[in-house]
Length: 561
Image 1: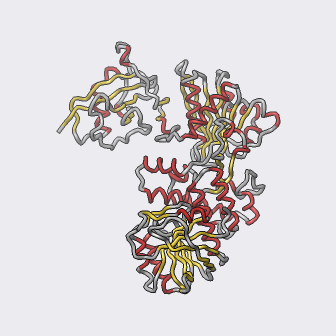
Image 2 (image 1 turned 45 degrees about the horizontal axis):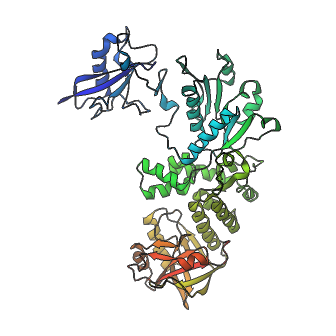
Image 3 (image 1 turned 180 degrees about the horizontal axis):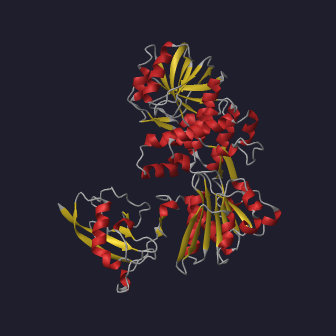
């Protein structure tokens, strides 16, 4: 079977014409399409041009060229769904007789290099990015240069690239984008939309900036540090914008010409949207967030690689470094505190511009729960109370949950006394509760289980072991966060299946009955919340859950709130 396939032939200057191959096999691949396009369009192509020179994209939004063995499938089924076929630089399509309405611009091609060398495959415009764009425009109008600072992996480089193209395409300025990327080397991109001049060079040095013919350009730097600017002051100090780490010290003589602008870490809600875009399940999103925290790059990376990097950093951390985790101060040694520490903005600060520009509005925290657990032997329980306070400042419920849960685990792991107030859950009455006191002190603790299967096995082992407290290595279970052997109602070693939450409601799943079945001597399902106010209001969902396991609600008397 054959079918008609539409394509749009585009050259480096953006000239384009739309046509179709009338008969292409249903099983055709990209190489077959190139041959067919070449056969049809060869009169418009330069002399000695061959089909292999053509590059094919699925559509105008695509950032990555199709491989020659990839099947065409249903693509190109209509004029609106035309495949994009690009003629590389110096191989321009002859279009002098084409009417004006046939011309178009293809922004995904710059001088024989597809744009995925510069842009990611897609860009999620979170609220903070839109606000930072307003900040950038305001600084440009005020003729102030800007340094984008923040934790590695939050999108500073992407913003610099976007803003560089904004300067070139919207403000019609000449732009030099100089990028230093790990694993990719150093590159330089020249953009001059007004005169339709674009070029790109690889493996360049800082001195190559001086070779640009026209000196009237905006210099945009990505991946360079303060020391680079200082050491090459004559060449780099004229930059319009720079993406670097949070450590960019402002000098007195910087104030008239320069501002720092924070790119904050990512919220769980935004990362959920990103995860949904790439079609991850809710559990996959939680697993990744457990390791990455608010680091977008880590969230999109392989979890094993991220955790290995965190492990390496944690090994270099000393107890004295813990004091730096919630501050802006730099570790004088080379132990990379910034690999773990992230920077955000106070939630109650609604001043659109100032909150990004001045460090008094910034908050410093660790958001990776994996990192926090690896640091468990270094930080004290009080660290998590401070982390909770930081979460309140940021309005970050996910961070507050992380802080409270790890506070409980740390107390138990360290064999410290946990003082609780407990009440039996009333399926009818929602107010005026009576609480009993309960103290718990784990003499032995286990921490293992990376998925539901391993956690089930670990919980079963707890039933016959001398261990008194268990919690999983990851957020592997929806229903419970830990299991403890408690003295409740005069019954020693009564097992508490505990859900640790800051919320005043929680949905009871059927898994509660399964876990209760591991303990024939009896168990209780306990919702553990941070304070009495939350405990007083707490309701399970539904209000009368379909379970025979006794339900309880408790709070910790020593928690900071």
